[in-house]
Length: 314
Ligand code: BMA
Image (tube, rainbow, N blue to C red; front, side):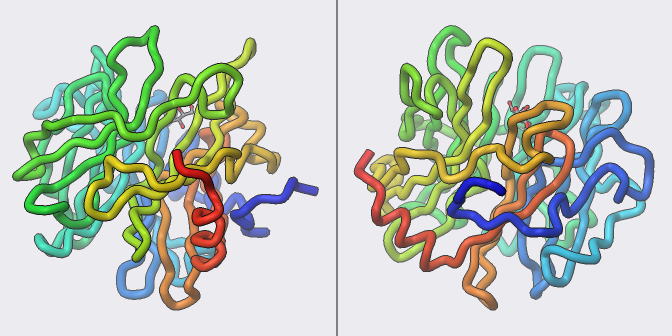
């Protein structure tokens, strides 16, 4: 029996594993997720048997069953032209940019001197326009806001300024999606024994609601034999997302199911995708379980908002 959770795990979990894959791989996890014309499209991080990750598309009509997986890798590292991808591409986040009529995919480029945030755009999840790096290392866990705030684009990301200090979620602005500045730490890791002490990072990009930008983030609790990755929620001001209106005290999801507790990296739930499925008015998160498989969990939008409203000011 699993502990009570705001998000209900699908009884079909894990919905995708290495065994589902059309070619030999080690693990499939941390997918970005979007709905395109009613179909759920995942951009799944796939770790091959060398330890290097690429991204592959999986599609399903109802977001749970009958996944159609691209027969070969969809988006692979290109270290010849992008040397910062020498150790692979990881943890994509997708944002629909209405103004530009395209999807923006931010992802982690793993270089030999730390992780960069890189950008590619696509209209069809078949061809991608690579834009190269947009944030210098070490930085990751980045996703765009879907529209400009005022006249500028905005991104949430997680730089590591000093490995001996806490790592927070930052907000930066750009006139052109490429050059970022006016950076500010907005959601800070807590301290001491908190579940989100020391290091936190954005999960998927923010969802716009009438009451604010809904943000899902992971908190990392370090202990003597490893770390526990749990999830929390926050609500940021619509006009000025550097203002945190609400933040959950307790986590809203913790590794509990066997596929979250045990795997290549145990005790990890790590979503890079969430969708607001208007047809069912539910939010589904797509997440990696223990860096090994893909799982899904859902919550009615109304219940999610009621929960966030009940959270304290940060
Ligand atoms: C983070 C990222 C994720 C991974 C998690 C747990 O730092 O690298 O890709 O799922 O660690 O290992």
